[in-house]
Length: 270
Image (cartoon, rainbow, N blue to C red; front, side, top):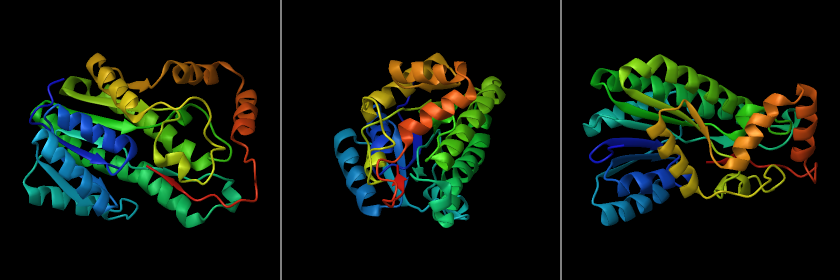
């Protein structure tokens, strides 16, 4: 894909996959708008990318769990005088533990960020891409999108939405020239699982963020609606659809079961 002189807006850009996307796109000559809550981390990354790749990088700190955040962010992007050619919806977080023990506010924020903000950003920038006859939208789903996940029930449900929504959007936008992709990583070496204070919800060999980004960009060239990163993860995603539902739930529950069920789980963010 030709990315030089395109402008990419990346949410969740302060670390993990978002930062990896920023580094790769900047290396290919794309200009960036970096969005996350942490201004310090965004500014540090922006400084490195400006120096290394001589691209324009703007930093817009935002808490996308706020209902009005996307409207505010859109106004800030407009004030910069920049269009958005590439949208990467990476921001999201998960909570580990049972629904009954969870903070209701955190559950609501999880849906707001993982689902509502992603939807609102997509709807904000899709019309401009369609009018120009080109553009890219990458929505970061998860391997957990392929089956319910006891002990991470809300997170998996939000990622199932992302996968379903994005694959449908891929079909709707095919005549427009806009490329749409749902990216489904499995366990990845990012701060996501460490932030829970437990590795109980993480199993299998961890891929690197750079590997996941490379998978996404190759998939865009193939023009497919979704891609699972890693052969082992791809096999697991297909397996869950072949097994009886109750068996799948039992297997996943056992794999996800907390080793210390009375320990409080803090939210994981990416």
